[in-house]
Image 1 (cartoon, rainbow, N blue to C red):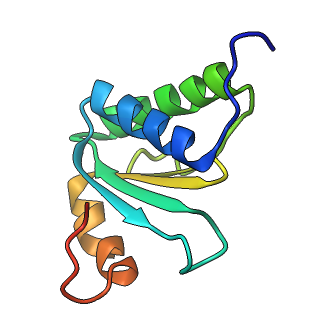
Image 2 (image 1 turned 180 degrees about the vertical axis):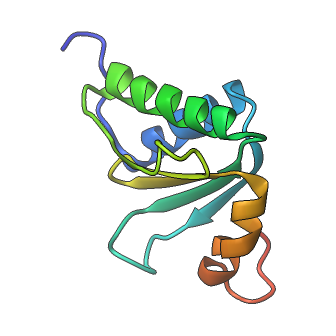
Length: 118
């Protein structure tokens, strides 16, 4: 389609971060997965203040990826709004309510001990 970008890993990451910032996602953590796993190049973990905001952030991100790159993303968990996974292909995004994020602590699982998130 006209006007759509080629979905490179870095462009997807830029689009994801822009969308999350536009929708007031909180505590955004970016984890570089290149060379660590084949599932994706980047993982983003962020929080929304409520189930409504978590759902809205994920819906708007999915729509933005579809509009800009012409492909649908896979989402899981949108119905509950506690934790939504958005798989764009090269970038995986986790949007949590703060309590749920604290419980699962994904950052600790993916970041080496002592490494700060970017």
